[in-house]
Image 1 (cartoon, rainbow, N blue to C red):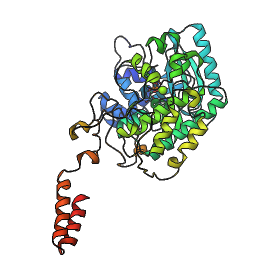
Image 2: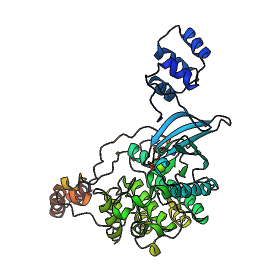
Image 3: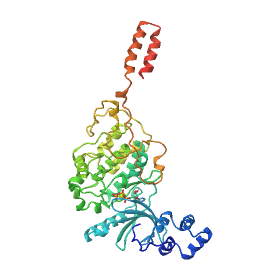
Image 4: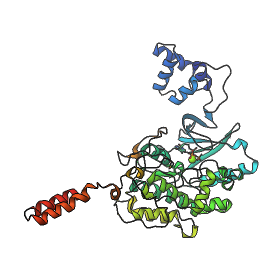
Length: 438
Ligand SMILES: Nc1ncnc2c1ncn2[C@@H]1O[C@H](COP(=O)(O)OP(=O)(O)OP(=O)(O)O)[C@@H](O)[C@H]1O
Ligand SMILES: [Mg+2]
C-alpha cells in the first residue's frame, strides 16, 4: 500500500515489529522453530502460521510498516482503478472482511468532498443483493477511503479478458442481475453514471453485483468533462446524453451503458473501438457499432435486439427500466440458449463490410478489446481473481456462404448428369451429390 518509504529502509524483522503485525516475542519464537535467521525463511513461516498474509510479507520485505487505514487492517492488494488502489481489509474489532478503496480526495475541493460524502451516505442506505454494499467511509491522515463488502471473484472486464466473451446465457444472467441492482438504485433516485464491465463484480458462482455506485460524481467532475475529451477511466460506455448534457443524466443513461456492457460481454469488443476519448464520444452520439454477430455469429437475433434496444441513442426509444432489461433477458438468463438463425436486417448496427477473400473475413487488427477464444471451456465464472493476461484475438468463424469449397459446385451437376444417363447410377449419383454437397 502507499506509505512513506522509511529512511533508511528497515530490515524485515524491524518492519514486522514496527508494523505491529508481529510482536518481538512471536518473531523470535518463529525464528527459533524455523531454526533460521534468514528473513525469507521466517517470512514464509509467519505466512504459513497465518500470522501475516503473503501481501503483508512482501510489503514488509520492502520496508513498509503501515497496514492500517482507520479501523481497518489491510491484508491484501486487490487492484487499481482510475481513482486509486483497492485493498482487502478486515475490521480490527469486528473482524469483518471488506474491500477498502482509497480515493483521491486529497486534491479535492471542500465542495466536491461534501458532495462525495453525501453520495456515500446515500450509498450506505442501499441494501440490495445486486449492489456492492458500502459499510463505511473515513479519512486517515490525508488518505480518504471507502469501505465496502468484499466480493470474491473478478470483475466482468477481467473475466472476459481472461476467459473470452460469454455465452448468451452467462451474459444474460450477469447483466440482468446488474439491471435489477440498478433498478433498485434508480427507484431511490440514484443514477450510477459509470456502469461498465469493470464495475460489475462476479463471484465464482455467478452472482453479480454492481460496484462504485455514486462514485462517478467524483470521477465525472468538470475537469473530466467528456465534451472536452478529458475523461478519467473510459469513454467506451458513456451514453450520448452523458456526453451532450453531462449534468442532466437520468437512469436511462445507465441502461445505455449497461447495453454497451452487454455488447462487450458477448463480443469481447467495446462498441466503438480505437480512437481517442473524443472520437469515441462522437461515435456514441452519431454512429452505430458493428453488428455483434460479426464477432459472435452464434448470437440470436432476439438477443441482439435486446442489446440494440438498450443502446438506442434516443433515450425515449431505449428500454426504459432495469426491470425491463431483466425481463427481456429472462429467456437466456433462466434457460439454455436457443440459437435462432435469422437474417440480419436491423438498422441499429453497421453491417460488416462484404468479405471478398476468405482471408479478409478474418478479424481486422484495428478492432480492439482483447478476447480469448474461450467460449465454453469450463465454467468461466468459476475462475478465481487473477491478473489481466492479454490474449490473442479469436479469428472470426468461417463464413460458410463464402468459403464453401468450389469443388462441390462442379461435382454436384456431374453426379446429377450421371444419374440421368445411367439409371442404376441414379441412386449412387444422388447419394454422392448429397454427401459432397453437404
Ligand atoms: N468490493 C470489492 N470486492 C472485491 N474486489 C473489488 C471490489 N471493488 C473493486 N474491486 C476490484 O478492484 C479492482 C479495482 O477496482 P476499481 O473500482 O478501483 O477500478 P475500476 O472499476 O476498474 O475503475 P474505476 O476506478 O473507473 O471504477 C477491480 O479489479 C475490481 O475487481
Ligand atoms: Mg470500479
